[in-house]
Amino acid sequence: MKNKKDLPAVENPPGIFRKTLEYTDDAMVCHFDMKKGAKVPLHNHHAAQLGYVISGRVRFILENNAHFIAEAGCSYSFDRFEYHGAEVLEDSEVMECFSPAREEYK
Image (cartoon, rainbow, N blue to C red):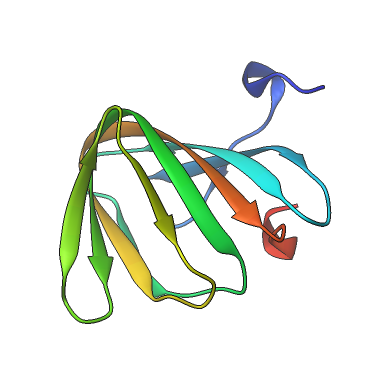
């Protein structure tokens, strides 16, 4: 068992602070503090990604220039290898699950 308050935050990219809460080989749960104006470049990865916005607003950008805005109470998902990025519209707190676990977040 881990407590979020006891874990160090990793900032990457600038303004995005991740804490990896728990993981197995099959799944991972991460907490993100995201500062207004921070951007996550368009990218993809081998893990499916599911998220829930605890507070704030985030614009998620897809490969075809489509986008959607997720705000407090919204959930979202990206398939494996689906391109996505983000622009943080206001300070936000987000929980995300990845399956399988992302090695670089362990």
